Length: 158
Image 1 (cartoon, rainbow, N blue to C red):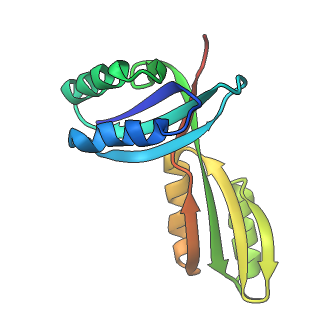
Image 2 (cartoon, rainbow, N blue to C red):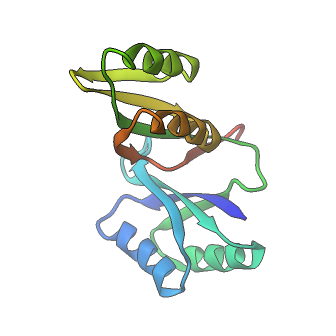
């Protein structure tokens, strides 16, 4: 089972290293990890996706709560939340395939952000499922490069 943890932390040097070290030191694998600023410049938000059952998640939460720089932990597994990922990819495109690629981009609400003679760069956001479907269609054209943010999430209500 995949759990999405949103962790509010002090925005200080070494916090990311301590949290990543806690995961690796206890044998917990991180599927995705994102860190970014919040409205308060003294804090950052880490969004971590981890695999495991409720016992593993309970251990992760207990270990995170022991870290001084951790302010708050939210588990979006049982809460209503909205989540998104971002993909940037470069796809092979020529005169014959460019129109079809653009049509698929329109269907998925993706944006072509760079055009070169033999390729296009595309930006697409959405759920993990949406992005997987989009990438499976782009694979037929030839994905040259790919980068992906991993999941970020917010609760639906506070």
